Amino acid sequence: MDTILVTGGCGFIGSNFIRYVLKNTNNYRIVNVDKLTYAGNLKNLAGLKGDPRYCFYKGDICNYELLSFIIEKENVTSIINFAAESHVDRSILSPQEFIRTNVIGTDVLLEITRRFGLKKFIQISTDEVYGSLEQTGKFIESTPLSPNSPYSASKASADLLVRAYNHTYNLPTIITRCSNNYGPYQFPEKLIPLMIINAINEKPLPVYGDGMNIRDWIYVEDHCAAILAIYEEGKIGEVYNIGAENEMPNIEIVKLILKELGKNESLITFVKDRPGHDRRYAIDATKIKTELGWKPRYEFKEALKKTINWYIENQTWWQEIISGEYKKYYKKWYEER
Ligand code: NAD
Ligand code: TYD
Image 1 (cartoon, protein in one colour):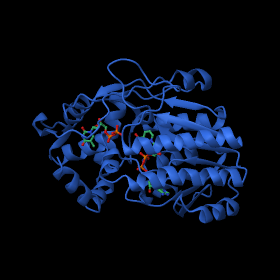
Image 2: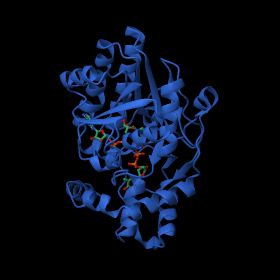
Image 3: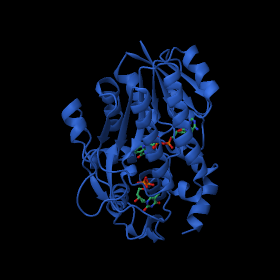
Image 4: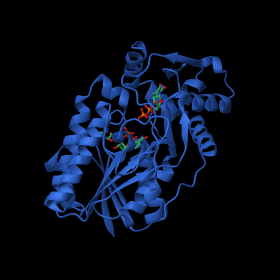
């Protein structure tokens, strides 16, 4: 049985990925290493208690000694790196932690892969490394990197390190670049969960600028299936874009959420724009579709409803978050607008 070290497995996508793999296959043991930052939550994986195919270590991906110990003790064969500081607005408030975790942390994991001769290293990157699009065109894997925020610059830096380790040391690496995810367990600082929760609580829904920025949305389970396909069949040294061909202006999504929850559009509040706000993202995922036969299974409106229902049914999960440390961040961020 292959043992995969998943980093950042207590976050949104990592926890969905671990659940997805353990539910749909019986080929893997998963060792989850997570620092449990504000975004990491053990409750995201509470259902796995007692599963012998899963274990957890609280730890920082910048800690080379700890990672070396875990790799040997658990006979780890490969790494999938989800761990990151992931929120653009926080990177604008304070970039340092983004450089530390996203750049230095990735470098430590690459060194670990090299030292222990691991079989595979998958870097979970983002379409944001490509920068911003005008009204037409889509990102392909060879689109030049042109990041605009401290977050995307840190992710692009990590991608370049992964590329260099592959090129220089023949390290068996693959990079994935996915568009915006939504689904259960997403931290309520991101657009969709924030708007759902504010709508439920009848609080203002803060839309940046004119609300016409476009993101290309994918349901998190489709992303997880793509990562597993890439892990199993992807070509070493390659980059794979992942997306579901679902471009939407932010304001349209906000209106859909209000409609689904039966709330009034008067809750929409246009606020000061995000500095350097990328206008449009759109992913061309032809490569993964033709090479690996992956395709998204979820239709946007249905999966958005499913997501809204999850937040309705899991209020204690997010109530604990919004009444904790997050409250201070939200206040500071909101005051700036
Ligand atoms: P998240 O913020 O929900 O989770 C990040 C996890 O990483 C948390 O559990 C956190 O505790 C952990 N972590 C942070 N710093 C760490 C460190 N130094 N050591 C160990 N663990 C650490 O993020 P997410 O939305 O699940 O994103 C996961 C990955 O997917 C990120 O690499 C992100 O760049 C990428 N990605 C996200 C999206 C999206 O829409 N959310 C889209 C494309 C790519
Ligand atoms: P976000 O979920 O932060 O993802 P990213 O910036 O990584 O794409 O934001 C998605 C879009 O929604 C982005 O264009 C910014 C916008 N947005 C708002 O209009 N209001 C908000 O409160 C947030 C968090 C985001």
